[in-house]
Image (cartoon, rainbow, N blue to C red; front, side, top):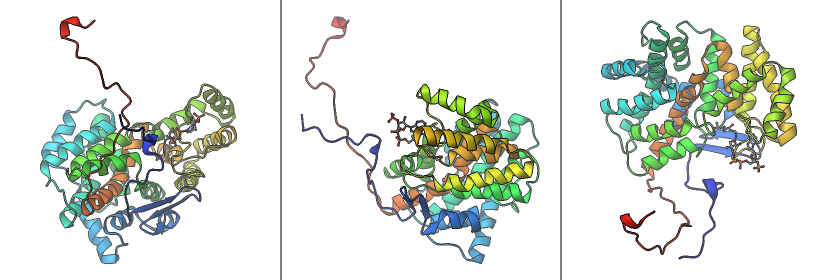
Length: 376
Ligand code: ACO
């Protein structure tokens, strides 16, 4: 047996590749997309501008942005057989499973891109345009709402709100969702992006790579944490109950969803921005109770465990007062993150190296074969 190697469990702090897309300074709490600070992007950009930035490496000019908006509007319509397939899925299916299955099925109607370039960016745009339609088609059917129209004049955020709520969004609601989409768009080599890049590194296609990513995002230690965080806020109910309930959970060694991060050692800057939107939306709706409960939870977890909030703590407190059901929070994360996944897949195709680490084998190596009849 070779000498035991040092195993870096969870690949913590392992630098696996070079990238020009996203930089996180976990000590200073900074997040940068292609050179731009997330705080500037959340204050000044739209989700379409950010998607363009991630794919092309620079901000679009006015003409390029108008053209991208036009394309994202046109590309929204699903192939007819895919819409019909979504109609046959169980109405009680988890929307994340519907998204994963539908992206995989969409691949059957699209070119299977396995190299960087214009057609691969077209695939990235197609996926980014279609994810809200997939969610909207499924959600409207399970709620018995009228069929979804393409509405190409709407921004991705306004279209998603129309698709899910069957009403026009207010300006504030549209901007709140747009900011949430910007904040979720990319985050370096998080688990789902790594899954996408591992799949792309085998020279598999864009759709297979995004399907892998959706599977990884679903888990409660990653994107699934946002649904659990709002469930906790609802269980707590009022701020005065937060201290006792959180302490009980910590005493049982339970994880408090929406806290802690592998990279950030201070507050996640996305959480800081989304907390402010949680307050703004709460004020506009005349109901600040989610905001206030989460403020108390934050104080207790910080004091008791020294852990800071991450993005997933607050997304539900922005979405719920708007009327978005809990099981759509993680799928909305995917609606945004698909822009980052596809940017990373394109980068992987440009500088391809099969991702294939090794394992430290700790099992036996010298067992003797036992015939079937002699086994107990
Ligand atoms: N609640 C309670 N304790 C926690 C939490 C938490 N949310 N997060 C970490 N800890 C504790 C662990 O129990 C562990 O304690 P111990 O040393 O006494 O055993 C210690 O902090 C270190 O935890 P690790 O799991 O080793 O830290 P890691 O870097 O692997 O974890 C993770 C990062 C998975 C995000 C973790 O903080 C967690 O489970 N958080 C809750 C889930 C969550 O919010 N996920 C969203 C992440 S952000 C995103 O995907 C957008």
